[in-house]
Each structure stands twice: as structure tokens, then as C-alpha cells.
Length: 349
Image (cartoon, rainbow, N blue to C red; front, top):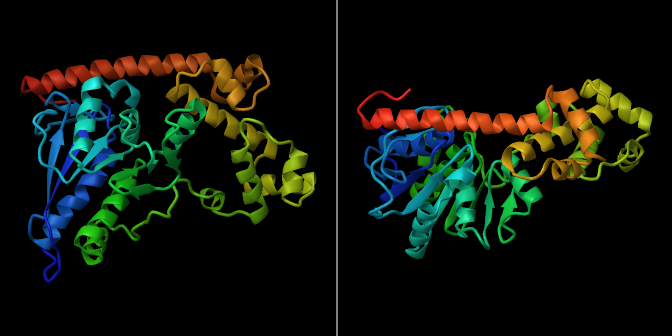
């Protein structure tokens, strides 16, 4: 049912560049607010165009193939182009795609990205001098690999910096698009869309990606949060338990009691798990040698790192990376079959 009497203005053409393995959730979270805006306003405020490199259907990370409207050329007249990416985004930063994005930027078409799409814009040099965001896992990896020094990455849920619009994955694009619709068509329409989606609060640019410890645990203590934050900020050169306790104004015994009570494990084990989680991200998302990953996560030697990793995950760092390669090979094969089947008129898996 249309939301009549709403003051809206302007029509906008939005492009979505779908890269293989894109996040279907992130893409839908960006597209659906536009559809609902048209529905509630009872007029076409937004038109969208789906683009792929060669005009063929594109498989998302969940295996679903999406038909597109066109290939990279000719370039439609757009008011905004959003790059939608996901797993193994580095594999899809080909010369043709990057050159096409640079041409759009040369025409002063605003550019944006959802999930890992910001990596593609950064690879094209189109985020130099801008603030932007990616999913926090990828930001961590890029910092460790010292990639894109001219880009300022933040942990915000989304960033709207001049003519660049970037956001993290999951449902974060919903909030970015609601903010964009609010700017273009008025807050009343954005709030009405949020109500339709049972989205109780439109998050803003000040919202951060990672939940604080008290939210993740359901309960906490200020001193515990302070220590956990110190741990997260000092993974490469871990602080001793006495140092952590001293910073928080606690005795070591008090610190251990707090962790056992609220986290259910000793602080040393919690700290080790943080470092191992960071190591796993680096193994899966970068090409850093295992030795460098070990040092970046505060392990004194590769053998010590390997032992801790195996004890926690049940396999070695090398096996983790090998499994990643095997999964990617399998994904590429399935993706090729899905695209071929769609092109021949068959059903995608």
C-alpha cells in the first residue's frame, strides 16, 4: 500500500556492478530500500541497472546466479554506481573492470561499494584521499599487509565521504541506503521504509561495526571491557597479565576472577584466542607467509604458533591455507557450471 502524502523529489539511476562471489545479503540490503521507496512513494524514484563484466549471469557466494542487464559497455547514465563483491575479491580486480571504474570516476559519477567492493575501488586508486570502510575482518588484514596507504579505513558501519559511499557487509548496506534516501527524498520516507522492513533503528555514520564486549557477552564490567580493548589493540606485542591488570587498576588475581566470572575462561586463554582469530583472518585473506603471520599475531616462533593453532582449530596454519585454496577451486568450478547453465537456458543451482 502506497504511503500517500509524502513529499519526495527527484529520480535517481543506481548501478550495481556484481562481481563473482558477491554477498547476496549485502546486495539485497542495498537494492530493497530502493524498491520499497518506489512502492511507498507510489512513483518511480529509483531505477537500477545490474552490470557484470561480460553481461553474463553472476553467481553470488551462496551459489545463486543473478541475471544482469548489461556488460560494462556501454556505460548507462548513472547517478551512483555501487560495486558489490564478496569472497576472494582480489581475484576479480582485473584490468578491464578497474579501467571501467576509472572512466566512471572521470565522468564524475559518484562511486560506492558494499561488503568487499571497497577493495576494488581502492585497487583502482579511486579511494585515495578518502575515508572509507570495509568489513572489519578485511580492514584488519589490509592494515597488516600495509595495503593502500593513501586510503583512510575506519571501523564505521558505513562512510559517506563526498562522492564515495562505502559500507561493510551483512545488513549494513540497508542503513547506508536509508541514509542516502533520507538525504535525497526526506527522512519521512526513509523511516517509513525502515518500518516496513521491521528495522527498528536507522543506524548512522557514527555507528561502529563491532559490538562492544558487553553486548557480545550480554553482561560485563567496565574494567573487563577496558582490559579486553587493550588486548585487541596489542595483538602483535601482547601485554603481560600484570601489565593489563595494572592499566585497569586491578590486581592480577582480580583480573583473573573477572574473566572467569564474565567470560568463563582465564584472561590468558581469551588473549590467545584473540590472537589466533586474527591469525586465521590473515591466513585466509592475505598471502603473508606463515612466519610473518605468526610474528604479526605475537607468537615467538613459527613452531609455537603452529602448535597453538593446531590445538585451537584442530589443524595447522598450512592446512588452513590449503583448505582455502581447495574451497576456492571448488567454488570456481561450481560458478562456471552455473554461468554456463544459465547461458544455455538452464536453471542455476
